[in-house]
Length: 146
Image 1 (spheres, helix red, strand yellow):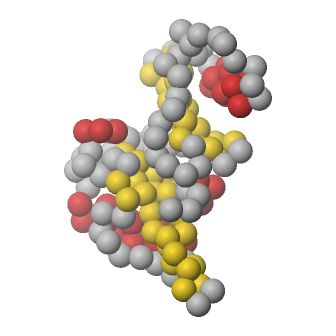
Image 2 (image 1 turned 30 degrees about the horizontal axis):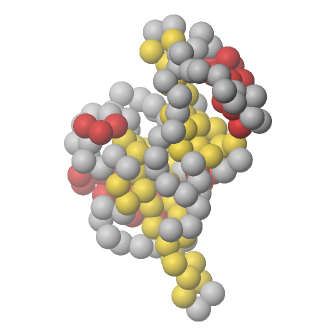
C-alpha cells in the first residue's frame, strides 16, 4: 500500500474516509480507502481497508464509493464530527479529542493505521499539539509519558 492520503481524508457520519493509491495501470492511478470509526474497535469497519471491494479512478470517486457503503452499512448514529480537529504533520495523521476539560490524541503514521499515540492527557488542544510537535522534533527522547 502507498502512503495514506490523510490530507484528502473526509469525515462522514462518524467515519474518517482515508484514500490511498491502490495501484497504477497505464499511468492511471487506481484508488482505494481505509476507514476509521468514531466508536473505534466497537465498529466492524474501524481500521478496515475497502470493505466494499470497489475501487475508484479518482479521489472523489473513491470517497463517493465509501460514502455509499457507509450510508448502507453504518452501525451507529454518529454524534457529530469527531474528526474535526485533525492535522497532518510530516505525513502523519493527528486527531485531537476532547472529553470534558481533557484533551488527548490519536497518531497514525503515513503507511498504516496503527495508532502510536502516547497515553497522555492535556489541558488544551494547543498543549497537546505542542507536545506532539516536540515529539516529532525529537525533544521527548527519554521522557516518560504520563
